[in-house]
Amino acid sequence: MTSNFDKEWALDQLAAAKVTLPIGNTVLKLLEAFENLPALATPEQTAEALSLFEKLAKGEAVVDSTENWIPAQSGLMIRVGATVRIAPDAFKGSPGKVHNGRIGRVVAKRSGDIIIDSTDGKNPKLSSAHYPPNVVEILAD
Image (cartoon, rainbow, N blue to C red; front, side):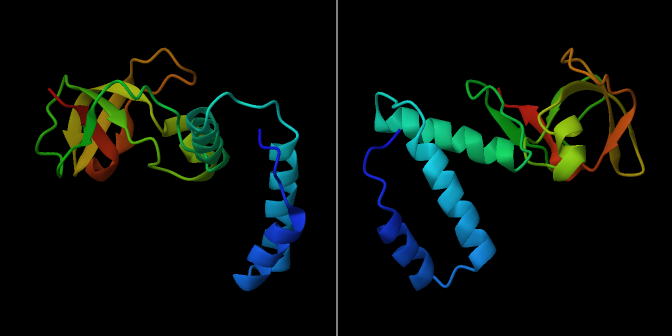
């Protein structure tokens, strides 16, 4: 993707930032892999590829950026029957891979939780999944 990878420069940068050895070695491996990928046509494409890689590496969902989802406020904006999305970065690790970015219909609100059945056609199907309101998003008008 880039033809000007300078390993010595990268090592100097990591040393100056006092990056630990395990982290530094990981960064160098990623840079070496990045260097050997096919070139993209524009810096914008490179930035998009890196952004997608970062999200997926952190277990965040990659979602349609043409829709405008906004955080719901303390469950007050959310009504039964509404279509909602779980924030793309709501949960870390394995739970994030199951729940982040999922779209569903609100079937109930109990004890402060928003209860959702998934409608996005993804597996596993979520039935009566409970979420705190701070991870739920609604589609802006």
